[in-house]
Length: 340
Image 1 (cartoon, rainbow, N blue to C red):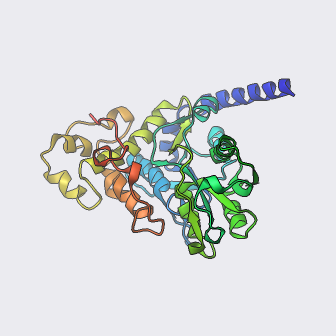
Image 2: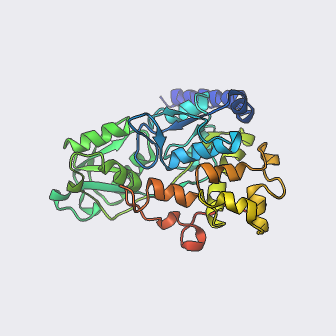
Image 3: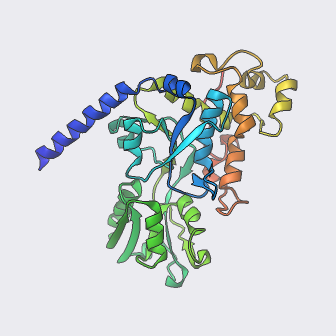
């Protein structure tokens, strides 16, 4: 059995290596076809979710739109591929999508063994638990013996096992491939507990039959830095995705947003803003982009704070505070590398 596993793993690495070589110039390929094929979730409100017309919105979707705005000057040049947790990495490795922006946790194994590269963090999250209020449970430490609905093939499943083992508690996992299946099973009473990233708990709760009957417990049991992913070795493309995300953060730090960016472009004397907006120098040249690539992102998608507030912030159904996702100067840890 062990030898078979080793052979299988070796074959997989070979496929990933071939895949990397075959898709090593995604930037040129995307420019030629004229759109970004973006892998997203199968429907997670606030992150990547289609409306009744099939139009996608969310903080992960905005990363895809920012890349399209940087490349084409048109944030609408994106096609979306809904992917389950199990499907997502294969879809990127095979070239089915150019970019994965789907609430995916950056881990050592994923970054080093799957032929993929994480290029940034667009949401700092942590795993939590949801239960029905009528259970009277106040803490995750009271969940011994519970049945737990969880998405198979995720870090969530592994963290769950670690947490119960570390706290010497028994549990019975009830696993599903698709996030919607997990939620439906929990909502139907097939398990006592639903676990995923805390942002996901708040997002999925609004889909339930009676959202007010459920409570998110206070414990956060893991670090879940979520971010966009590209194929390993696809460096030019990875740079474009990475700096598109950073442009959203830098725009917020500079005080530029979708409402003032046009007037700032014509009137600012701040050298940092002039470089960022492409009216002085050419930060886009080495990325293979036009001088106004960052301007296009802020004008069409908005800065990071705008995206957060519109999709998951306190005034949305999710009602999530900025917390760790505030800028570094406001007590959070979101931070763009210097743009100069």
